[in-house]
Length: 92
Image (tube, rainbow, N blue to C red; front, side, top):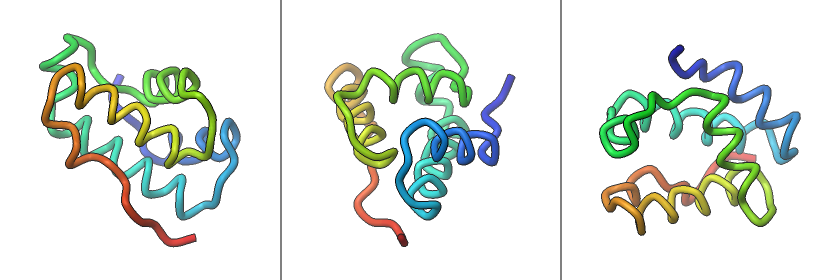
């Protein structure tokens, strides 16, 4: 199963709130991460919407972008090379 960015965007809004623009940028970054193959290489697991949502649920709180950046930070510490997938800005 591959990452379905539209499905992820909808599920991010349902699970964590935030703006549509925020969920869209998280979904795009997740798609970029999946397409890069870096997550699969490091973990041996194909990145899917379900995995993203599961990982973001573990974050201490916040909006989709807050949770995404928390997870990307954890991946950066564990493996390195994930900083490029962080979110700095999005349209509300």
